Picture 1: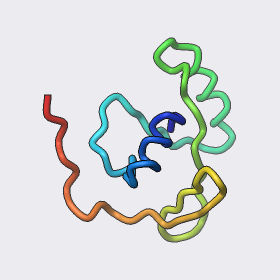
Picture 2: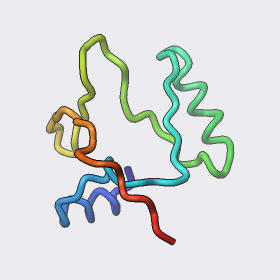
Picture 3: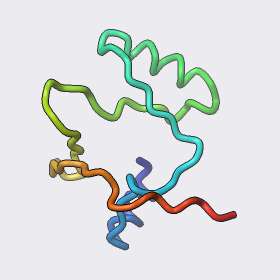
Picture 4: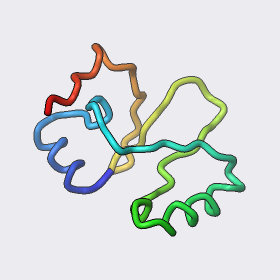
Length: 86
């Protein structure tokens, strides 16, 4: 997540992971292929900000690690995400 988005969300008490979002992609690949896939994504202008953001581990649930190393369990959204209204 870009630092500007992270900062605004922290200031407003919002969770960016529960917003409707367009133009984002999450790819899960074997650990051995991660760097190669990342290099290919970054070779395209639209993939210049591609990043490895996590790893799959043998444990139930999904956890995120925040800016200061704080770990939290991610829950499902409480309601359907609001659609983007143009």
